[in-house]
Length: 240
Length: 261
Ligand SMILES: Nc1ncnc2c1ncn2[C@@H]1O[C@H](COP(=O)(O)OP(=O)(O)OP(=O)(O)O)[C@@H](O)[C@H]1O
Ligand SMILES: [Mg+2]
Image (cartoon, rainbow over all chains, first blue to last red):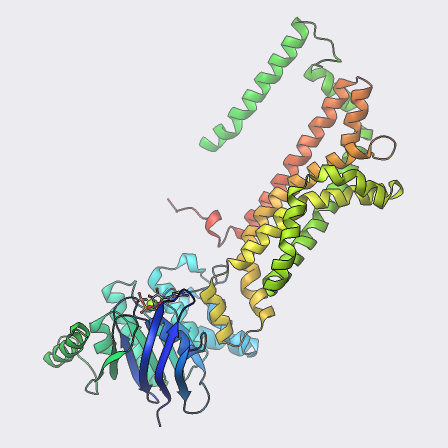
């Protein structure tokens, strides 16, 4: 059985907006799944439902066992502006009552993996947008989640930073065998990162295509990659 | 250069105005019970220095006591509001009523209830009432203004409400609270002065009472000296709170940041 199964999930907001309707998909253990869809189709809403930050109005959301330990990376870095990078990364560890020394070491380690070892004592305002995003990812990773939810984490970044972070993320997810649900607008990013791409319809969002990509490493300039990318793009553009 | 100018220019203007004042009083022979010259005010200040300082201390004590009470009550109630919307809906209208009622109007009542034998308590209470509302409303707003994604994140990691309050809401509210403290410091001084005016003869010993007394005796120079001390006290309070704000926020908060040249 898969790690997570959504079955005909619906979500309406108080103002009557129907964000999701009949949203069904599954995510397997260790899979890297992208949610791709137009702006406002309910991707963030779906992530919040999965995280348990909101509950569905209809349908079911089922876990294989219990909800695994989660990491959440928001579209904005969402750091505490008064705390330095290390303290920000340590936040989930502190909340889990992990001993100070160990928390410090693990947070430092997570920062180092994101290439920010020398910025542990920097405040968010002393970091660039891309660096803040890396801190936010380090914070999610430091808690050693089994499932990582990421909401357009690289949307605001320049292409080289974005590609660098894509590579880092892919490597880290594989090394720690983390399941990832990754929301993005970008066909290229979805194709590059994912085992599967779930393409959503405009609001109210549901899945209109579930595309399994060939396994193995991806070469951004290879013809095979271009082909995969075209499959995803076609599915996204196809009228519903 | 620019900084020196921004200090020097107002100072020069002040000196020029004082000189003009001194000159006009001398040339036109204005009687000292109408408008004393600055030199006369200085003399009055020196002559009554010890007693004026005692009065200053008395007003300062009342102001700070009132301020501290307003701070504790305002922040405490704001925290309670942040934990319970029901409580907020229930109590906030009354806080507003308290705010829009001119406290001067209930000052005599407070004096009677608390009693003239505990005059300092009554004065501090009036000062606290005046300073209370900005602290309550700003802190309430500040506690609500915390980044809700950050709060979601805390929830995700199983944080309790108190952890969320302590680690996210309170630090987010700090800039709002410090802004309110600057306003409330001045307000509690006003509250203390008004309270002394209302308390009247024989009981109050602060600067405001000295102003009333000096006015009755037509010792206008002493009146001005007391007024000067009150103004200095207000400035000192404002400067103190500004310094505190700067010390606590300068490293991280937008308000204290400026682009590096
Ligand atoms: N709290 C809310 N109250 C009312 N409507 C909401 C709320 N949050 C989201 N919506 C609406 O629900 C729909 C889906 O929003 P959501 O944020 O999930 O979209 P999204 O797919 O993440 O969009 P984007 O790609 O632009 O981030 C939108 O039409 C939005 O206006
Ligand atoms: Mg979104």
